[in-house]
Amino acid sequence: MSMKKSWRDRLASYPHLPTVKEIPSPMRKRHGEGTIATPSPREVEEAMRGVPEGRLATVMGIGEDIAVRHRATIGCTVTTAIFAHMVAHAAEDSKAEDRTPYWRTLKIGGELNPKYPGGIEAQMARLEAEGHTVVQRGKRYFVEDFAKKLSRTR
Image 1 (cartoon, helix red, strand yellow):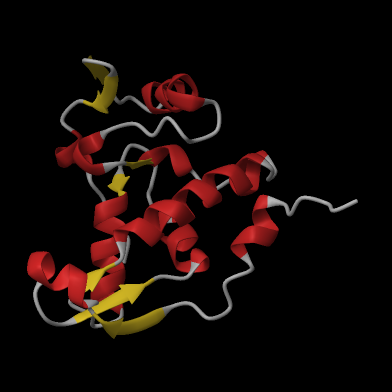
Image 2 (spheres, one colour):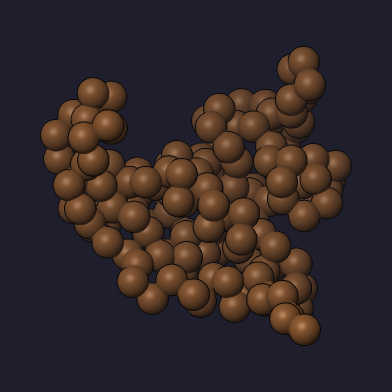
């Protein structure tokens, strides 16, 4: 019988990261020449931990900060988003006093992430408890005026 890896174990299973490589050819049309930084899960978790109460971050912003840290042209936001998802689930397995405040990390445009533990409702409740206003646009939810509340994660 195989045991399923814990979220914390999954985060630890990327010893080859971070890396900085040339931007792959399929991405060059959009991003141009240069390098791409692929973060480690630990870097993403540290960035998410660094967002203070009342402030916010986006996956895109964390990716940009990681690119700057590694002196790369761009950061891999796909990998950053995957690791943010994993960090959120690992945080739910942590003690409350040691929990990474993942709910403060939003998708592009300030959108709430339905894949975080508890879905939109749980993230919305935590954000509203910290004083943020969440608005619905169609079927999606966003933090109102999120750009004014962004925090650097470097």
